[in-house]
Image (cartoon, rainbow, N blue to C red):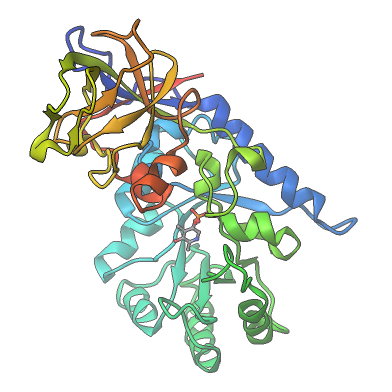
Length: 381
Ligand SMILES: *Cc1c(COP(=O)(O)O)cnc(C)c1O
């Protein structure tokens, strides 16, 4: 269905040695892993949950075209922007597409219909946009409920009025089926989702239509509550939605290997510094490697000295301040490393993206989605 091609075309021979390898095998495995968890929690005879694989933010930085093949067993893809939907269709995806924030202006409705998307309606403004855009005869929608997160969604007391408007559209043949969704603020923490789900169930009680409530954290911690369609994102890419549980410990495999090479080696004398502001000063003579990766590639500038990194197959640490195009690493104990040695910033053979994120005071989501367009993505099996 999808051609497994390099999303950026063939590598130019003299390109800067940095790339992100995207593993189709890991994507397949992770999707399967989520489904196993959900299936194990289903009551006997209950239909399996269907999966909207979330590929917003250019597939969490992996590049949409680079993940479609690995995720081809999904039931649908969920994303934010019309042009992401267009890219899925252009790449050959014929199945369901969910626009998780719906349409933003009346002019979008026609294109959303042409792309055969499912739309989320999260407020009266969205209904107005749909009406002004002429409606969408065969388009299914999810009505999103605000069950406490207070970002998007109708409050319970607004739901009756919203549904009356939508049923009006349906009666005129300008709308497909109506489902219900919500998003949980604390699925990854000790508070859990019981309160939010109680609000949700009260609001949708007695109404029919598919239900979607679970992101990765909710799928993994509350699989028995997953509803008809789940919406995992981060776990598909092999990173963790939790700060207290690693992706590997839950059986997920990293999809992205962010790799570069050493392009310089320096031998420091005691007291000499490296990089801007001499962010690291050597106490003893030592070899320092210079990596072809900086914050303009998406490596976090806030990563402190000591952030884990893999060089020539050995785990070591970063040194000093991350520059725009380069960063420095400790080569003590790796005498065989030299120019051209492989460096894994994060991924299967190196530290996890979550370990690097932790050292930079952020989360894996931010690092993955920040990998810069100038880094070439290559699909691996
Ligand atoms: C981003 C998003 C998800 C996926 O969240 P993960 O934590 O990456 O699993 C699910 N639902 C909605 C509405 C989202 O915006």
